[in-house]
Structures are given as structure tokens and as C-alpha cells.
Amino acid sequence: MKKYNIQNYVRYKTDVKKSMPNSKDWSEYTRDELIIKFLPLVENLARKFSTSDQASGVLSINDLIQEGNAGLVIAVDKLDWQQLANSEDIEKTLKSFLSKRIKGAIRRAIDINRGDIKIPENKLIQIRKNPNDDRLVSLFFNSVFASYDNEYKGEDDESSSWAMNIPDKSEPYNIDLLNAYLLGIMREHLTEKQYDILRMSYGLDCEKVPAKEIAKRVGITAVTAIVIVSQIKKEAIDRLISNVDATQVIDYL
Image 1 (spheres, rainbow, N blue to C red):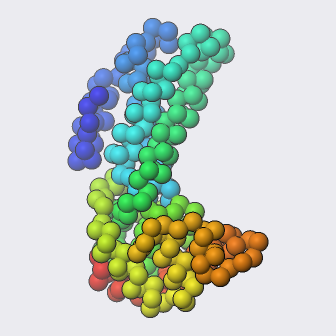
Image 2: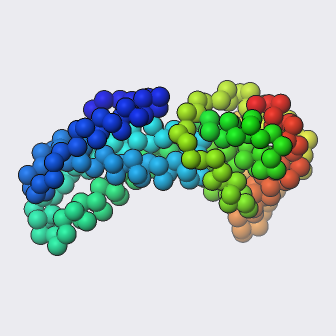
């Protein structure tokens, strides 16, 4: 199967359309024809992931499609045609089975790559075009921390989905520079406990530390220590969004 970079995304769609096999009985499709038949399903699922906080800033739309395609190939090779033949609706059963495997492959790829911070190119474009937009700071911090941890979502849902309608051409940011910037901003605006919890949670100047261990290090001994650590993380990010001036973000970018 050909590999396409994001600049050739239109060519990819054209090639898929040209390669699409004619409709026929499901039992008559070859392995390769079946894979091509469901490439649009991969693209559809990948696009849904690309606009989610889970994938934002982690993998580009092109990366997501590549991972989904790999999952599709594996799934097709595992099809049980005897069982499919007994299905009342073969197409529906096929789509259900393949969708689960494609989404699983994409999720695994996101989990593996989440440690590499990326700020999606489409978001950077919007930030630079709209430096006075009130959502700028929220957009920046949500993008950065979502690359590490998809648990956090800002209070404004619009800030999470804003400007996600064009292909993501992001490249990894220099992690050392970004971490240094974040640590400086955090020292300026957070309490000591908030600073330490964010620093250790996201491994900004150390290896990532599990929440249970963080709780011990900062003196949280309650039974619900892990929940408290998670809550302080959210409060710290909200505090950054509320207190950091937009010019500080623009200066960095």
C-alpha cells in the first residue's frame, strides 16, 4: 500500500476513488479489494479522532489514517467468512467488526505517541491570526496538556474544537524548549503544590511520576489521594488559562 504525506492528501483520496472495486456479492471480493472497499471507513474514523482531545496535537490526520489502514489490513485477515455468511446483514456485521479494529489501532497509536508534544498547525495558524482572541490562552494550554493527558478538558468545549476543520500538518515542538517555557510560566502563576504536581505528572523536568507517588511526595495522605491529585492538576491548568497573558503565549510561538 502506498504511503502519502499530508501534502499529497488530495492525491490519496483520488487514488482511493480510482481503485474502488465495483459492487458485487461480498463473497466475491478479493482480500485487496475488500481492504480498498473500506478505506473510506478508515478515513471517516480517523477524521473523528483528529477533532478529539485524545488525538489533538499527538498525531496528524495523515498519521491517523495510516494507523487505521494498518488496523484494517490486520482485521480483514482475521475475518471469519463462515460466520459472516450466517449474518443477517453481512455489510453491517463487516463494518461493525472492522470499525472496532480500526479504532483500536488508532487508539493504540495515540497512546504510544502521546508523550511527544505537538501543537497542531491549524491551531497555530488561528492563534497567530487572532492574537487578541480570548480563547488563545485556553487553546494553547489545552493543546499542550492534551498531548500528555487526554483526561483534561477545558470548561469551554468550543476551545477544544475550535479551528479543527483543516488537515493537521503539525511537527513535534522542541520538547526541551517547551518544557522550559511551561516551567517558567508555572513558577510565576501556580502555588508550590500545583507546580510540583503538574511538573511531575507531565515529566517536565523528570520522568513522569504516577499519581499515587505524587501524592506521597507532596504530602497528600487521604484515601482519595489520587482523585485529589487529579483535581489539583485541573485547577492548576485552569489557573494558568485564567492568569497567563496572551502576549506570553504569542511571544513563545
